[in-house]
Image (cartoon, rainbow, N blue to C red; front, side, top):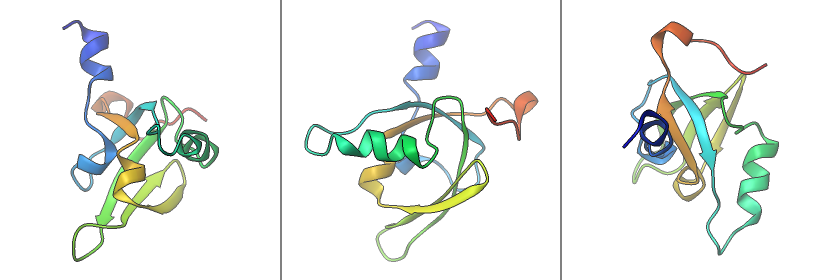
Length: 98
């Protein structure tokens, strides 16, 4: 795999560790809910944006508390699974697209 493929094939937000600084690599909705991609992009899940998983609900880990840019949202795990992320390079920590 080349460097670009490594970055794009990262984990999804629902599997991220709490507190890791991440960046959005891709948003892809399931065929059963294609509108999720547009909705996630509308609330700020854009390629290159900084994101962090803040907490998981108990029991079962649903919903997830997620910070994207300066906003905080509760997402279902199924929605968070639509967001492919990569760990943010420590040199770029805290930088968002805006």
